[in-house]
Length: 299
Image (cartoon, rainbow, N blue to C red):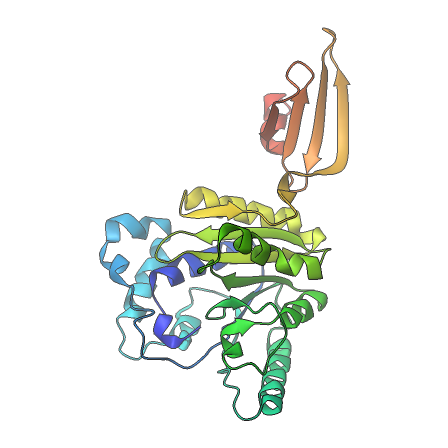
């Protein structure tokens, strides 16, 4: 993240996503992975703020705040932190600027990250917001590595008890490379439940979630809400684990009807119910527990 990016069209989707988790009672921690501004045009895509009718409806309060912040000459992440649009969130905003020898750069980054662990220790979900995404090795001494999160940093947050989401983008990867890239951290943390959301305004931006099993159903509820509200703007992608949300959690009820057909009701990992009938074994109806009970007249 760079201060020059604040308020661009990607920021709008990003903050709205985090706000939905906050509204669901999730304590958010943000590590900006803040790096120094450069002389590129990146972050200047704020024309959407003039198209009020098209964009404001997704999150009106957020839209109005971002419009004010983006108009500032020296906008920064501190404007977002102080704006109240992410209430109750924890922030780590120290600039990551490794310099010197490879050994110096490793030590600087190590100390920087250790401090972030302390600052964000009370967060349920830590959002890692690098310029470019995930570096697939842990070479923190590499020039330019400050623009990436490192696998062992994701692991440290996750194994400290946090759920984790990090920003990345497809870039110039072909589809096979992109699939492998999305799946990379789940080979390293196989117990993590995956979710991948991609935002389709401006350049493609993706958010890769590593979720602890006990939080998966709740987080899936938030993610489903995001994709409904931002229809076709936020879409879901999958890793090599497939559609984990649709997998059965082994809570299954089988009913034998008087006409000889069999109905199977199973609870999915995302908390929804999957209903199948032997009359049409290739069809699965997915329904919330609330709607299912109402259909039976239970309330």
